[in-house]
Image (cartoon, rainbow, N blue to C red; front, top):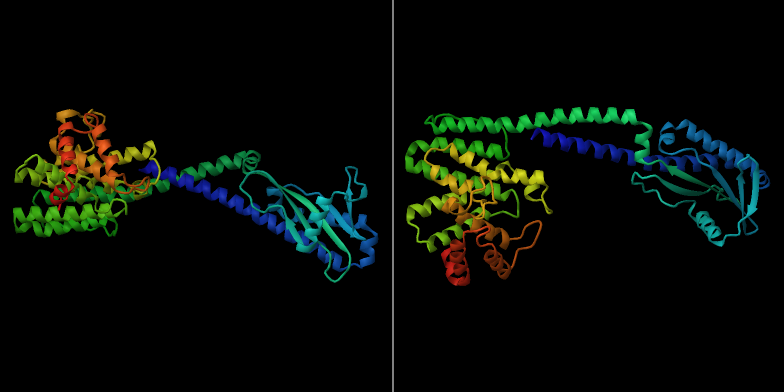
Length: 448
């Protein structure tokens, strides 16, 4: 558990770091555009229209110097993107002209003949500020910015244009490899520490509950304990306290109360997910229908019914995000799920006189061909009640909606059971169950 939590915290930290980088890049882009626009417009407001119209080269130099000053004063901008090159466009008698500085630093001007580009300048003239895109996903990109710097009260039009080349996340890491390694080491240490703390926070109460349950089961029914929690662990503690307070009234009553508490706990576990609500009770009804078909006696039916209602009690240790996952489980997630029969058996094994229901809980995921879990037993070596619960469990799972699929039709379900004879299921039990399903009215009457 500590390793899983460490991995989760590490991944979360990396995601947060990546999100902060993207936020900084987008924020810096917007800030630079605003600073550039305000700075140049302030300058233009302070000079006359004639000075601007007659000296485009000087204007370009001043704008370029102001942009350089902005970049120099804002260190965060220098990290996200390199210095920019500014071009100046102005409209004279309806024609657009381009003023720029060549590689040797000389100022040059030329008429814009590209109609598409001239149209983009017209759009920038109306919009005041126009960018190709301000979105950023952490990959190196280029944003073109056009700003109408002309005062609204004057008749001339000037537009500055520049490209912002934003550096990608990987490039930042390469240029700051030592800082990145240090950050990851610190993040791993913090994540490991938090993972261990959370693991202890979860594991110790369960261990304490197990020890106290053994104490109560040994006959010390006056013992009480609290966890101070309101989650499933707290629910289990309250259930065990209730059991201990009533068990004194008699052996039979004790057993009935215990069954009621465990069934309530099972319902709480099923209710953790909207997809499994009522699952254990339906499985019990299907199990009892097969039991009636086998002509089991009352004592056998009782043991089998208790085994069925409690078959998934071990899922208390399975996180909800795994139970509700809409896609395929990873190998690690499936290994967690596969532990629930053993966990359930461990919970029940601490209760005296309940040894008879352990096989149904422990082996309800075994397969006839020996490929099941947790022990990999096969054929008749699988306890009878476990073989019956397996059929009922799979039937309910297939005929109810799950986050990863819709419920199967009756035709699909029947074909699946027929195909899985001698693979997943005991063929004799499948035949009994299929006969029950074929007579729908009789089946529904049986499971009421």
